[in-house]
Image (cartoon, rainbow, N blue to C red):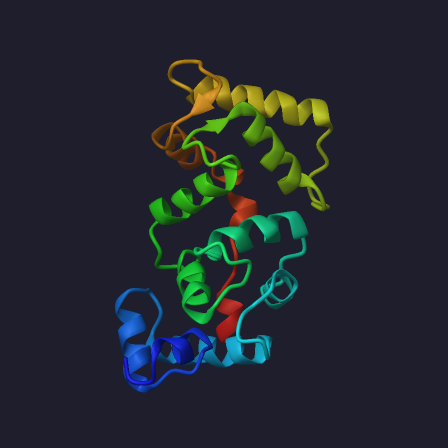
Length: 190
C-alpha cells in the first residue's frame, strides 16, 4: 500500500489503497473514500471512541452501540481505526450475506465468549434490544417467556445453550432477534 499502514489506519488513503480495501469489502472505491472522509471528520485522535461511533451511526441505544463497538474493535484496543471501521461497517452493507450478519450477532449474544449462547445471554440481549424501543413494550415476564421459547425451540439438546448453527437457524426463522443490531449504512453515503 502506497502511504503506509499507519496513515491508512487514520483514514488517509490513496486511490490504490481504496482499490485494495474494496477487494475485501462490498464497498465501492467511491464509498471507501466517503468513509475515509467521514472517519477523518469523526475524530482528530485518528481513532473512533464509543461516543463518536454511536453518534455518527445514529445508534440511540447506547448498550447496543457498545456491543457493536466492541465487535468492530477487532483488536480489542478500545479504539476503532479506519480499517476496523470499514470492516465493521462492511457487515451491514446491503450486499453482505445474511450469514455474516448472523455471525456478528452471535458474537454480540455470546457475551462471555464461550462459543455458545446461553438462555441468560439471549435474555440479556433481548432486554437490551427492547429497552428504548417505543414501538414494543414487553414486560420482563414476556421477555423471559420469549427467551425460554427460543431456547426450547432451537437448542437441539435442550442444554440451555445454542451453538452457532442452532443460533443461525433461530435468526433465520426469527430475524427480529437480530434486528436491533442492523445499521442503515446507506445514510452515510447520501
